[in-house]
Amino acid sequence: MIKVLSFGELLWDIIGGKAYIGGAPFNLASHLAKMGIQSTYISSVGKDDLGEKALKIAKYYGLDTDYISIHSTLPTGKVNVFLDKKGNPQYTINKNTAWDEIILQDNFKNVLFKEYWDAFCFGTLAQRTKSNRELLYGLIPQLNCKYIFYDVNLRQNFYQKEWIEHSLKLSNMLKLNEEETKILSELLLGKPVTKEEFCQIIYSEYDIEIICITLGENGSIVYDGQDFFGFLEQKVKVVDTVGAGDSFSAAFYFPCYQG
Image (cartoon, rainbow, N blue to C red; front, side):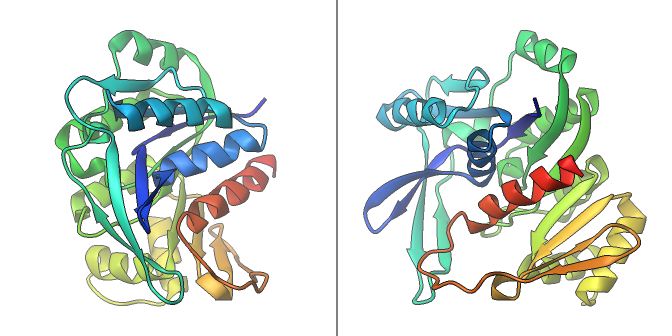
């Protein structure tokens, strides 16, 4: 069985006054579990009703929740989401929440290090705290893992050049969207470049094996170091794009691994 370990935020998106469980790496881990992959998630929730509900839902989805800690003082994360007329979201992400201090005891780390993982998945947002970055950067090099999958997933201003560069150095699979490609071109390369040039430069400088850029209604492109592959999206009526990239990542990763 394919085994995937994921790390990051576990929170509730508040949309139109209703709470929906989320967090990009959590969404990805949940989709993988639904696809029959053994999916384990590392995060933290608060000692509150939302935290309790989050754990129940995670187990219902089929996730291994042994590494989701319950924080004694910080609350479960919340994000206020506003959707524009096209269903595109704008986020207000609350600070000082449980997933900002993900806790992983040494005995749990030792168990993870002894396992073989087909992939480890993470993003940028959970790196906004020093403690999470230290945990993440110390964890990845010690894992026995085939693929390190980095979904850039920029949110608000919770990213820095140093974090992204470090994440790229640790990874061999990269996924980002068209807007993030423009941001990283300026941030990392100091100038705007085409999507194709971006892929070629990042591939050569960071030894990334596979790069995927999603293009919204225009599909996606994938670069493997030699060739570019284009994939068209099926035309649908867009109501809400929250979590769309995460479901794409799950569907993208599975055939990549199978191949």
